[in-house]
Length: 247
Image 1 (cartoon, rainbow, N blue to C red):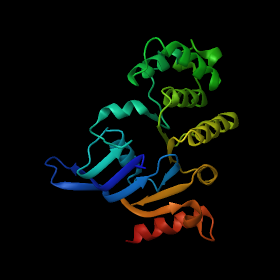
Image 2 (cartoon, rainbow, N blue to C red; image 1 turned 45 degrees about the horizontal axis):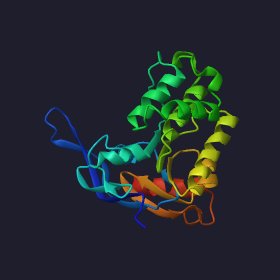
Image 3 (cartoon, rainbow, N blue to C red; image 1 turned 180 degrees about the vertical axis):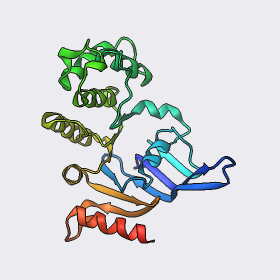
């Protein structure tokens, strides 16, 4: 079975300065495969290269070198984006749109037809607890409500690959429970979840495997148990972060 995601010797450089002669090395030769049907954590300190890897996976920026495949196809094959869901920690939904408007807009971008969208939007707003606020504008939403709407937007197209970037930011206990249910449901259906998070209890509870990125390089790839060994997850990660910083 082909992996859901694969990075092969991927590098990303950003030019600095007016002439771009100096380079910021954001990702340095990362090779990583994420199995289909897994809940996979991407961990690392701030500015480690995690966001750059996700941006390349979503075709928001191009790798300087190496190859990336998304759902069995090169990332240049943009049709596979319709099978991907993405939830960011800070959503930029237009504040004048209503919750229903947002889902209709993003559902259309995902390739959902005008015939199926109304029913899907209704069911999704009900699922995330926003059915009674469907006509309210985003400007009237709390941070947690926007996060719930972000989750609804990410799973509206029933994706084969769901990317969650710090998804519990601003969610209350009920929202966190809903998120866990979504992740477990995806796994039970044989779909893939990539979780980028600093919330370690969430990682331990949900994830099968993890990759740790430090300084743009792959510092670890394996199961959560292998990462922890006889330590806490926090201690294991801190040791990798410090080793990477020293290198």
